[in-house]
Image (tube, rainbow, N blue to C red; front, side, top):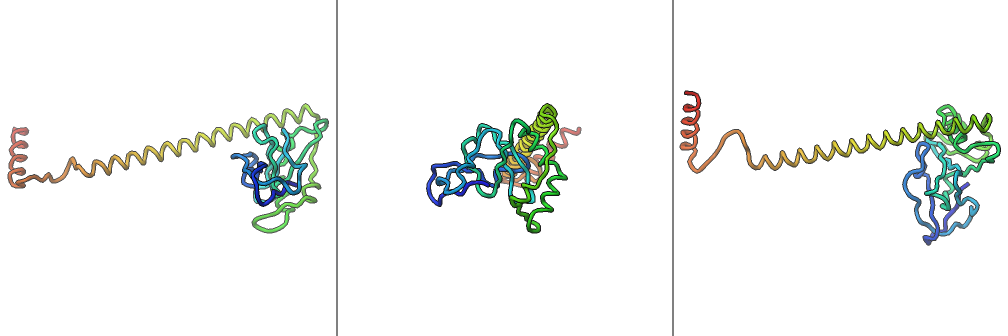
Length: 205
């Protein structure tokens, strides 16, 4: 289980439930007081963080960016024996849709499920050879990275389209103050109309 921060202070960094989303660790850790319990939960490279509340119960690997941070008690920390298992493979296995559904079904509560430690401890993970695990884990990471890139591209396109729309609307509002069509008014509407009629007559003759 994760750590419990002291109510005051900013001596430690914490990852919270909202930092683990759909198999990825997002955003920076948040400063908090020193942990009052859960000291051994301080994160190491290739630790696995898993959400303890749902419906998203996904797992994610810890990278260099979050080493030495602490997860809060809403997260589980999984440390695998590297002699028998590859972290990326374990993450890929946990994040499979049917495993997520099975964990959610076994978890407590309805709607917003809560995964307890015994339920997670009972999860059986098949372990092929380390070579196969590395291959599967590497493939899963590549897929995840591609999805992250596509998601970033989509978000950037949304921002670009929104900015272009905003600029176009601002330009339209600005031009609305100086109409280029419709009824043209002047100091003498009758004279203006006569001038326009003469110009049109000359252009069509």
